[in-house]
Amino acid sequence: MEILGMKFAPLNVPLEKRLQTLAVAIWIAIFIFGPFGGYLIAVYLLYYTETICFVMLLYFLWMYYDWDTCYRGGRSEFWTRWTRNNAFWRYFCNYFPLKLVKTVCLDPKESYFFIGVPHGIFSVGIFGSFATDVLKCKETFPGLEIRLVTLDQHFKTPFLRDYVYSIGFCACSAKGIKYLLSTPPKSPYTGKAIIVVVGGAPEAMESLPDTYRIIIKKRKGFVKLALENGILLVPVCSFGETDLYNQVYSPEGSILKRIQNYIQNFIGLAPVIISGRGLFQYSFGLIPKRLPVTVVVGSPMKLPKIKEPTFEEINKYHDQFIKHLTEFFDTQKHNYIKNAENVTLELL
Image (cartoon, rainbow, N blue to C red):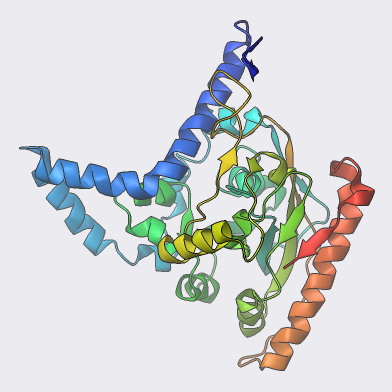
C-alpha cells in the first residue's frame, strides 16, 4: 500500500513478522540511544527520585567495583547462557534472516582471531552470529570459547554495560584482548576464538549498498597481537551487511566528512546519516531493511610466534593476511552477491 509516495506495510502481515520487526527495532533503539540514554536515566533516577536514588548509589558502587571486568574476560558463561538464546534473539536473527557458514573445520585446540569485514552500519551479521546462540556458533565451531570485543566506553555507561556484559562482550582494547589470550579457555572448551571487526566506527561511514569498502591498511594491531601470541587469523565476511541501509555518503575532504570525523573522534561512535525502514512503512527509518545476511568464516592463516615483532615483520604478515582475505572474498562472493563480477573488496 502506497500513500503520498510512502510504501506502507499491509495490514495482514503475519504476527511472526511483526514480532521480528519489533525485536530488531528494540535492538536498534538500544544501540543508538543506549550510550546517551544510560547516563540520562541514571542522572534522573539519582537526582529526581526519592527512593530509587539510594538504589542508584548502590549501583554506582557496584560499577566502581566491577569497573575492570571488561578487561578480565567479561562475564562467565554461567551468566551469559541464559541471555544469548531466547525468543527475542530468535526473532532478531529470523528477521533478515541471518545465516552462519563455515568453509573449513577449525582445530578446537588452537586460538584464533576472527577478523570480521565489513563493519556495515551496525555489524548486524557478526552480532547475530556470535553474540547470540541462535545460529549455533558453538556447535559450528566445537571446542572454541567464543568472545566478541567492543568499544571500552560501552562498559562505562550505566545500564548499557549490563546489556553488553549479558551477551558475552569484552573490551576491544589491547589490555582486554591480551588478557583473553593469556588465560586458558574455561572448561569444557579447549581453544579460543576472539571476534574483532577491525574497521570499527570509521568504516561505518563507508558503508553503501553493493559496496564492500573496508578500513584495514593502517589497522595492524591485530597482526601484532597475533604474532606475539602465535594465534591464527581467520577472515570472516558478512555478505549483505552493507545492503541493510542507505546512507548520505560524504567523500573524503568534504565539510560533512570533516564534521563526522570530528564527532567520531570525540565520542567514539560514527555519526552516520542513514535510512532503512520504519515499523509500519518501508520508505525510511532507522530499522534495517529485511534482507538476508550470510556470515562466512574462511580458512585460518598461521603465523609464527614472535615475542617482539619488528615493524617489518608486522607489515609482512599484515600484507599476507590482506592477500588471504581478498582471495577468500573473491572465492565466496559469487555465492552470495548479485552481479558479483562487478563487486570487489575495496581496501582503505
